[in-house]
Length: 87
Length: 168
View 1 (cartoon, rainbow over the protein chains, first blue to last red):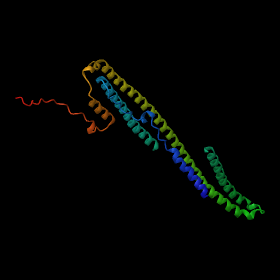
View 2 (view 1 turned 90 degrees about the vertical axis):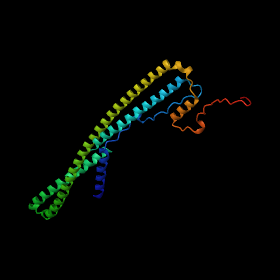
View 3 (view 1 turned 90 degrees about the horizontal axis):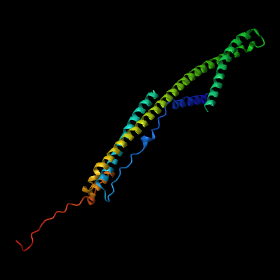
View 4 (view 1 turned 120 degrees about the horizontal axis):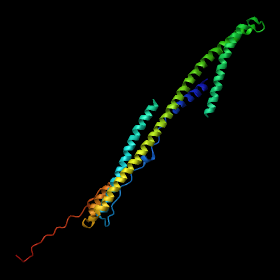
């Protein structure tokens, strides 16, 4: 009788894991690290070249900013979906 | 594994139902055998066994009902979990599409600035030499590094005319 109770309890408890939704994997594009900024060559750099590299670095910043904002949005939305599904 | 669990549950439910039915039959039989002298002596024992089987059978019926309720909740929970996964997957696709599009727009805007530099700023290159100190500062900022005293720019050279000795 005890063994039967143990088996039934184990079966019932295993259902707890089955009922909880699985937390989703983050999209790969949101888990990529931000690239390092470009450096300006120290030998014979023209003013226009300096400006181009600075512009590229600013672009890198904005790309990273888009990804961070998307990550925040993804996390908040997934949290809401997960909490709704867990009720 | 799931099929094995289901088979086990089916078999155990069948045994429990059989116990209940057997108990009922035994009680009825215990009253009927009153008119059969050969087995009349066993009617009390059969009745007792029948009552016992009935009680245990009713108890197990409650267990079966409880199990059914749990199964229903489990199925409902599984469906909810699946719905959550589907909603989550749709959200992922939406966000990835937005990121790819926004990054593309950022790059295109940056490219227009570089085109402008190549067109308008490049003509000032001969008149705008870039001091090494400016490059040092920008590179240090790009790497988030500290500029030490050694790498600070040299002080500007000032020329002073000293009065020549002997002359008034």
